[in-house]
Length: 65
Image (cartoon, rainbow, N blue to C red; front, side, top):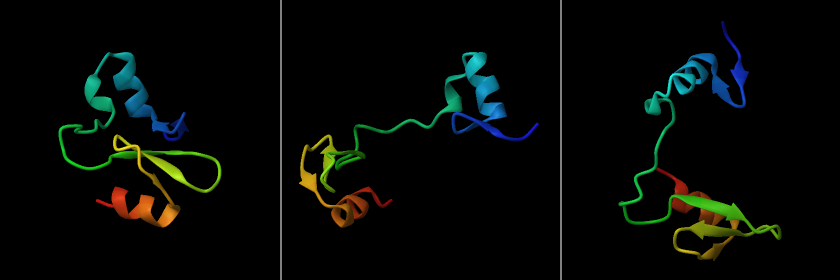
């Protein structure tokens, strides 16, 4: 069966139903640097975990892997 439910493929949904914790990617928070960003609403973003306020170009640069 193909398709997606809430952005996840069906096999990932089945793994989550079986309590398989490997179904979702995890973020290594022990690494240095930012690993996420929250939109503020005026075109800027608050970086996680640093809290820096940056524009879209800087957000993309910091989150590039």
